[in-house]
Image (cartoon, rainbow, N blue to C red; front, side):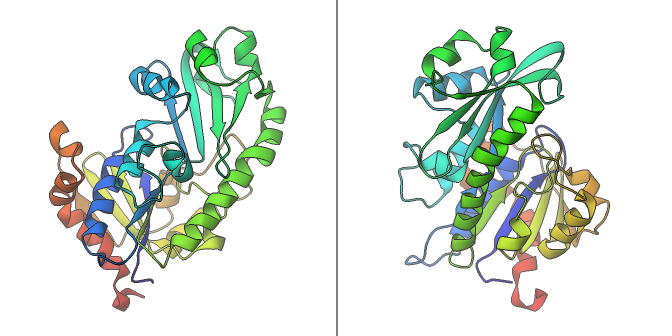
Length: 303
């Protein structure tokens, strides 16, 4: 394992697992061990998403800038060592190339088979140039709110209306974006500490992660609990569990992979007040024991 750790943070609960809080504090903790002349730790979030209804303030803030991103990716950018200003144009998108906007649709099955919610728009930024993918079926049914159509440049965006069309768009837009991000992560790993935050309760956010880098450790975060896994064992278990790729719809969940590999450490995570959650240094202090359990797996004698 590298002296510059590469850590994957996954959620052990579908929503509100605490991944971003954990990742932000971990980046702060790692930054304290980096020499002044060395590159700062950097965080990546390959995929993200938010909801027009449940995350309305965040959606408005981003679309006011004619952008589409979420607060989790923005928080990672704020504490990451990047060449751009943390919240400036391009900084968030470089760390988070794919973002999906949802809305609740009670009683309706979405285009991708999701129950009671519908994907509206994807923002895909493979290499600095942002493209949008619009759910044409949702648009035809009047499900895309007017402010989204007015604030985002969707007039020339690609439209898809079926799973087949969406999978074709995934191959042409999303997968190249993920491949470029994986290469960016590969180049960063070994030269600086890297934290990769997954999406929802997805076990591995990039299909080719096992091929492009040596993952040191996995932190599976759930309310009140951290479980720590060896990176190589986690990726091997995920490969066994996944079988064949299922583009655009289903990925292996953290719980499924966790059934196949034993954790090397477990820790309790205390509840944090909002003031602490907003402060990376405060998180690092509150979760100090948990971070030590993660970084213990990166020591040379753990190889």
